[in-house]
Length: 429
Image 1 (cartoon, helix red, strand yellow):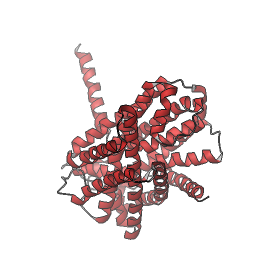
Image 2: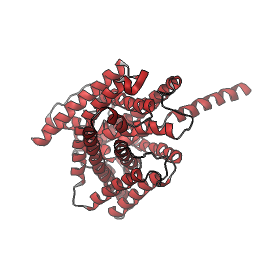
Image 3: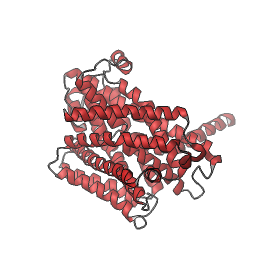
Image 4: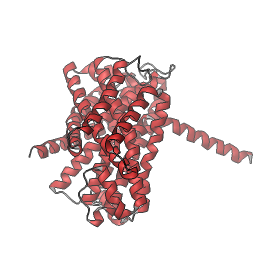
């Protein structure tokens, strides 16, 4: 009896340590599946069935490499990505990149709030504008008034809402032979398929995720008095790099697993029933109701709300970190509002402008499109700058990135460059 109790305690300790290891990476990965991302994945499944599942397997190592680099920069230097960019690149270049990021994030916040409100109206009824304001107040309030440690726990718990999409897969019939083939063999190279692939890459590898994870790693140092950047405490590097690796690989796997589940669910239901034109996440949820049943519709719709509550604070927070670090302002969720007034003002302003966009005549679908274009334009130079930062010893010290990770990082940069070029050419012509 004592032996079994000891083994149980051992496994409990392992689970507890694993839970502690999961933080910035798992939240970053979950925030990637925001309502605008859900709309893109739903469109891919509805229009092309299982044919584009292979993109999620391709993006995983590329996405993981870029996020590992951003996390290492934050943990090694004790500063976020924008601050480190300012140490190497001209101020005008950093300001331009941060301005593009801020614009893309605000568009994304507005689109995500609209999608959350539309999903809430589908589930409980009521006016969408009321839900937009309520969700905006909740997201901004959590960041401004909840202490960092408590807020970080809230974000971790919100990631569980994404399992709704895994549950949807369990309630629909999947043609697994076709699905497995679609995961490994690209079969459609038409113009529409290429455009959708570009959108999938753009929504999966997004600049705001780089800024968020690097800043969160730096924030983890700031809230623990005994912790210091790895440049100053190299003995802690092995433990911290192991934690970052577990956290980031798990977070990006979680992100891509949910994206796979959304494509599978919409391919098995909407595509197989001839519903091929989905513009928003709420449309996907509503289209599921007559095809897959009320419960599948309910899970899909509530998942949109849950992931929006996770993604909107990350979008606003990453914008605030980027602007504050670039300007040299005090930044961090561990500070109280009166200690970092300008940092929290950006969070509130970005969320507030997102609300205004919902009340304006701006088409939310166009807002999503332009946020994707802006993200695509910003991603390539930011990723290239990150790779240069990570390889420089004056920034990273002895922890300059190894060749294998740099190879994947530059590979991801090249893929995003091709995707951005294709997106811009398609936009023009």
